Length: 356
Image 1 (cartoon, rainbow, N blue to C red):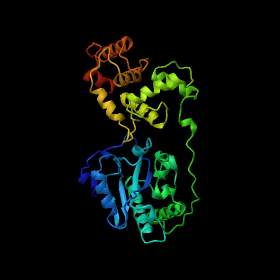
Image 2: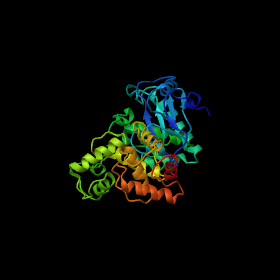
Image 3: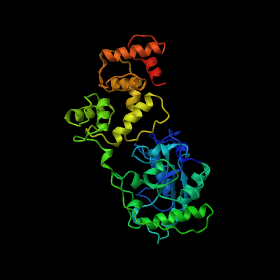
């Protein structure tokens, strides 16, 4: 099989050649907007190859076939919401919202090719296509099924298919065509109208929040853990976000949680590390940190990453971004345990031991 982005190396990073999490059969479907008709998949692939920022799919379907951009074992950058890229396959329909109509000659053909791509992806990974004939929303990260881009990234994504008044018809037709290509014949599917779920308030912590999660956040950012998210905690969260190159809004939400979890997972070398949202330059801050030499007296986000890494190895430091006596003592103890030169200076060998 030919893969467009492997044969036409993109101008900016558009994939990881691996997955940090195993694929359980979840597929996110997209509508590309701005293009339609014959060769629109090829044109979209060419645009992705030259675009300056991240945004890609595994496959794109149009009126005359399917263009595969990369293997399903790769990580594509199709969803900015945390966790979906590393766990899902991204398949797009090259169509404009104005063209989405089962009564024209375009939409049924394009959906049919999308169904073929979905069946092909599942079969290559030894999934039974008939087991995935359901839209499962955010659970698409954990099991076989389908979800719309507009559902899993509702805050800042208007997806033509998922927002269409005819969504239920499109969904049912896609399932019908998947079943047909899986060999089940022309089975009919009926789907109830979709109502987007509200984003739970518990997913965001801000000034006024209380409880155990607030205590966890306070311990991490280095303020007294009284369980009350007040101005001091807000300021510390802003600094934490700034050090991780996130938007420093003082609100602990999904992106801050993702970046923080990845920090600990990365530095503890755990298999649960997720891909980073391509709009979130957190990996770059990690790379900057582990290529730095840190000495007592240093301050900033790189020191916080060091402190978090040491905490991941069992040390009890406040991640305040200050390389003071307690951090130096922890570094020296860690160096001694790993058989390194005990000098309290964190260079390549100490970083290497810390992330191994």
